[in-house]
Amino acid sequence: MTQQNSHGNQIQDIPQTGFFGHPRGLGVLFFVEFWERFSYYGMRALLIFYMYFAVTDNGLGIDKTTAMSIMSVCGSLIYMTSIPGGWIADRITGTRGATLLGAVFI
View 1 (cartoon, helix red, strand yellow):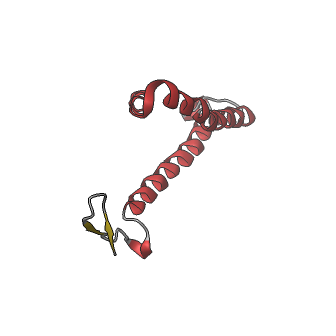
View 2 (cartoon, helix red, strand yellow):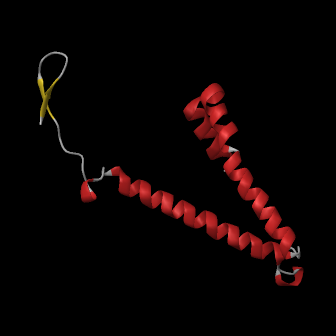
């Protein structure tokens, strides 16, 4: 397929499709997101075990319901902070500044 630019020259499109017609970068994006979610849910499970195991078993010794409540609040805050974080990134720091601050805090 050819197109014309603003000077009247013809430009030939190079197809950017990869696996089953998807863009090439989608595979990388999929695997990054997959492993991020894997580590997130895995860490949540490990933290609950750590909180309610007895101190003699190298845990914190918190009862199960309190440990699950703490993890529920933590999980809720993770998703709810994206709203003020997005506002700060849009209005105050910009995309690069927000990414830099996020990398520093993580």
